[in-house]
Length: 250
Ligand code: FPP
Image (tube, helix red, strand yellow):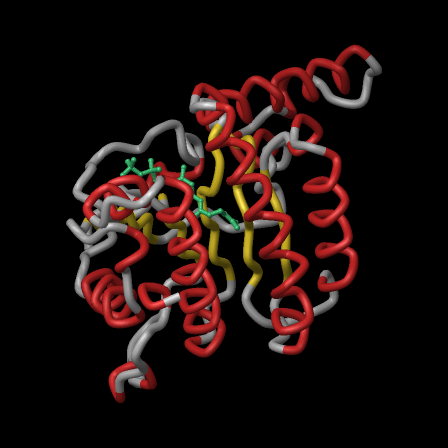
């Protein structure tokens, strides 16, 4: 489709020196506005957003980023019209079916975070299959945040801790910040170094509430379907110029 084709630029292959963020997290936003500006149905905005996902995953992998988390469906997104929810679920299945061979060939691990047990069965099947197939890869880990909410994640963690406590597997004094982190969906994943939010909104929207304690935030006015590899480079370079002190003095 005409609006989905992307022209490659020389700067797509740019080398970025300096310390790369280990974990980039993105709140993909602005699909609906992108579609509205073109008088298209909202679903077309999401479809165009999938094209951006392909490019950004590829680029993160090329740059040696270890983790890329994409906020694809929040615990609050169920409030959207039924046809929009089902087109998002369908896009997810199509994406995994269509892209998995290529992602696997490119050494990408396809992981998910969130309570996927509430997603339609075909989504669960494709997500589990994608993880099983790619889990031993060594390239970027793509975490798809689905039916994910930061508050829900914390509540789930507390429930799991209480279950372990009631079975005598954990003592009150064992519950440190590090121990708590191991009960989150992101147990094996470092906190995001940078959280990117396109589309002009500047809020966290229930995303990685625990993990964002010391993340750098990067906002841009570009809607997600128009977000390019050059925007990603800009975000990384801005991140590299931030002074991260983690509460200490330097
Ligand atoms: C926010 O834009 C975007 C979403 C809620 C969904 C993001 C999903 C995709 C990009 C595609 C499906 C995902 C995968 C992994 C295949 P919005 O709709 O809130 O935009 P608006 O604020 O302009 O209305």
